[in-house]
Every structure is written in structure tokens, then in C-alpha cells.
Length: 481
Image (cartoon, rainbow, N blue to C red; front, side):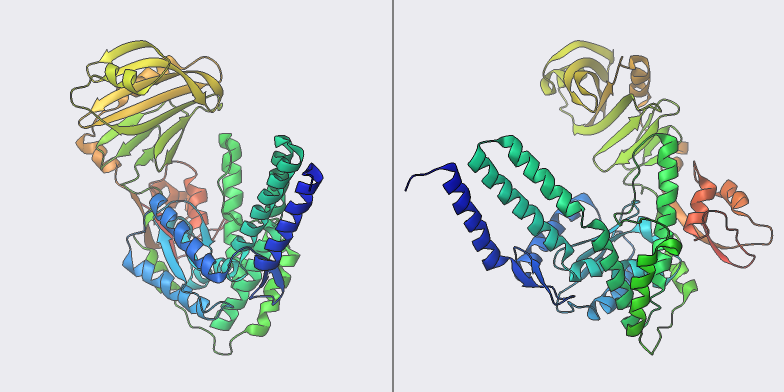
């Protein structure tokens, strides 16, 4: 047979069809309908286990046995009433200030202490867990995996048939658009399932609207803050088109869960739930480092650094970033091990290519210019190495235009060990539970809280009273100290 592009394409398409017939038809445990998937349940669980190991490399489990036990208990009760009660669900509280919760294939569900801080009842926590269980039971991640895999296969076929890499890139782009296009419907289905699982477990399914309201308020605040700080917002992965008070589709799917209500309503204690959050770490923990104003403090590493006034500091797990107010310059700091016999100048020469203008700053630090890729393209950056005990603080500066050399050297020179007063500043912030007194307002409470910016707004969010609520005398209120 003569091999032609059309023959290759014809055979490849039949190969995809064969794969679809073998692996692609699976019954959705929620709807009972057939979905296109490329893995069995055993493969799904194995994939989730693999991803779980990666998540645990990125995050630590939050060290609070009582809170972890509460999350595990609530999650297990909801999962037992779900469409996939046969799965061995695992619920993990992550030690992260991010406002997030997510699920992996096979029953791995994660919730951050950052999102739990904004909960004010057991029902609200159950609502978030129920939503994530819904993603697992409806096999959303598996269905997305199948779609993206199929898009990749079809893209490879197009490349073979046409010899055009651009066609492959286009196919992958379309595949990505197809997957991301599921977002709203998947989130709505997870809300519907979460409300159903609340109902059959004995909770009020209408609490799902309250949960989405809390997250929508958090999203609105983050969007406002991101606009004022001229940066991209960081929001919960769920897609909220509008506030639940105005979201007719969300109200309809939650109302549909009423028919599943358990006649034996679950009795909960909001005060007991709030007490479980008393002393919870708020923001970054001590082992992650603390930002106060334009300074960063790290108790475990015993160092501090000052950045230019007005710059935003972004404390990431593996690096520290500072971005200028106009987004035209960025500093980055990472840590490396030091060779005792090596000078700072030699360290730079050994670790960077295309190095020039190597200069000594003092006995423990040096700087140089290097050409490389950065957020502004491929251009000249400034680097520095600062020796402190057995570690090297490696600092980079990149800019859209001229490098901010003076500000960079000032920051480099500010790196040093903590003094006794700064060790206190390097301590983590915590949520404290207090009884509101007559005359207390969030404005007055904000002045007492250990928050640098947007203190009043953050306290309202923490207590479910955003944007303009006020505490009542005798009410439990969360503050930050």
C-alpha cells in the first residue's frame, strides 16, 4: 500500500476511535450517563496518589491535630453519603495562607488554613468540603484529563499528517479552551452535589449559598486590592459569575437539594467551631517568613532584608519576590549552600554564565551583571551573593528599563541576622477569639490588630461581615494578633 498523508491521517483517526471504544466509555457515577474518559477507577486512584505526593512536596500539613480531626470527620461523613462512597477519601489541611481548596482524582481533598480562617460555622466548612467531594464524585479532573489527552493525540495526528507544528500548537490551544470551557458547568455541578451531600448528612443545603457568598466577598476584596496594587489577583479556584444573591442558576441547584434533606437535622455548635480556630496561624507561618511593611523577617533562618519603600513583597515557598509599584522592576532572593573556602566573587563566577563587572561590596558580599531570561525578556540583570554563616543569599534584579542599582545595593546591604527585637517581629500572626464589647467597631478593632494593610476589611471578611457590617456586644469576634 502506498503511504500518503491522507492514509496516515485515516489510520490515525481509526486508532483514536479504537482507543475511545476501549477506554473512553465510562458511566458517570453521579448522572448515570456515559462520559469520555481514558482511565479506570483503579488508574484514577493511582494517579491521585501520584499527584498527592507532589502536593506534599509543595505544602506541609498544618500542625493542629484538633482542626485536622474536625476536617477529617466532616469530610468522611459527607463522603459516606456521596455517589462514590467506595473511595478511600483523604482530607488534608494544608499549612498555607492561600484562600483555596481543591481535589485530586481518587478522593484526595485539600483545604488550606487560609480559607478555613474565613469560616464561621461547621456548616460552612462542610459546604467547602462537600463542593470538593462533588468534583471527585463527578470525575471532573478525570474528564478534563481525558479531554486534554485526546486534544494532544489529535494534535500529534495533525502534525504527522500535515508536517506543520503550528497545526499541533493550534490543536493544543483548542484542547485547552475546551477544557477550560467546562469550568462554570463543573463548578455549578460541584455546588449542586455539595448541597445534596449537606442535605443527606443533616445540614441545611442552603448553607452552600452562604459558603459561596463568603468566597465571593473574599474574591471581591482580592480583586479590589489587586487593582490598587497593579497586580494579578489570587482567588479561589471556583468560578463565581456573580454574588449568590443574584445567581439564579446557583440558587436553583441548591434549592433542588431540598428533596434530599435528612429529617434528623444535624445539631452544630458555632461557638465550639470558632474556639477551634482560636490561635490559628494567620498569614505566613514562622517557618515561611513574615512580611512587615517593607521588611521580611525569617526566625528559623535568622535573617532579615529590607526592600524599597512602596514595593510589594511576595513570599513564595521557594523564593522571595519584591515588585516595584509600577511593575517595571523586580528583585528575587533565593538561598543556596555555601562553600567555606569560596569568596562571594568566586561563587558568582562559578554559578553564572555571561558574567561581567564583578565587584566586591564587602567581605561577605559581591555583585555582578549577567545576561539572561527574566519577566521582562532576555536582557541584562544584576545579581549579588551575600554570605551568612553556611548559606548564600542569591539576589537578582531585573527591570523593563534601567536597572535600579542603588536600591538593589541598599537591599543587598540590608541582609543580616535578626536582633532581639526583630525576633519578635519574625513571630507569626494568630487569630484570637474575643467577645465584642459595647462600642467596639471594626475600625477600633483594626487599630489593635497586627495587620499592616487593609486591616478593617480583613477583619470584616474574617467575621463574615464584609463589606460594612459591625460587631454586636457579646458576639464572638476574630481578631489578629
